[in-house]
Length: 300
Image (tube, rainbow, N blue to C red; front, side, top):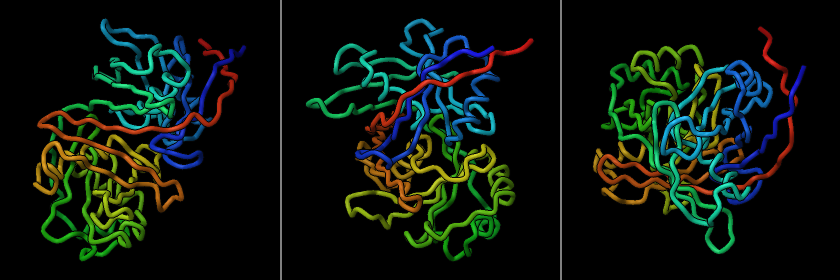
């Protein structure tokens, strides 16, 4: 026995189709069991598949759940959530062209602002959780080796450390863009390095950017979650912006522009602002495909 569910394909943090971070979105996911959502995430085989559900907490607009192809549920407000709100805006489910809504992700209840300037694709601004600064890597040689780099490729005088604004990722500063592009992680060694500092994924970054107005050029790896490389990672860009403000690299309330996905041929631009403990991430994107999927019923 099967049922039909609608889905959409959204390019997030993109201004043209086939760029940015691809997201599959199951648009009416009420009643799906965890194993059905995990099976759909395996079928779509994107870094994350997001499921839009009716709210279960008072005062929230929608509940969002996201799974990787390995079946792991992921949290934090990144491209997984931003893509959902882009589709909600484009589909007319939010009513007005501009407004503030509330999303429920994991244990977090976070505000979202949506606007559609002059009929162009919607721009979504989401608040992430307050930054939490975690462990610093002490074995730089082991970390460099896990990334397929030399220890001198890591940026001198700057620590690699875990920061979370909903998901804790290891942020690794390196010398230049060539080093970022040359990174070739060994999955087992990187998983071990991440486990040693309680990190979920790894964000390699430099201030040597493609656009001189940008702040950082990045790549993201998360082998433990079944994500080899992600072209745009809002749950890592938020922590990076918070860290750069904390380190004095960026002025408080300044605009942080993060480049990602260039090495994959899917360039993405992520904008972040940090004001004290408040981290906001902004971006746009495009709904590039829609369809239906047959889903097997859960057997007892």
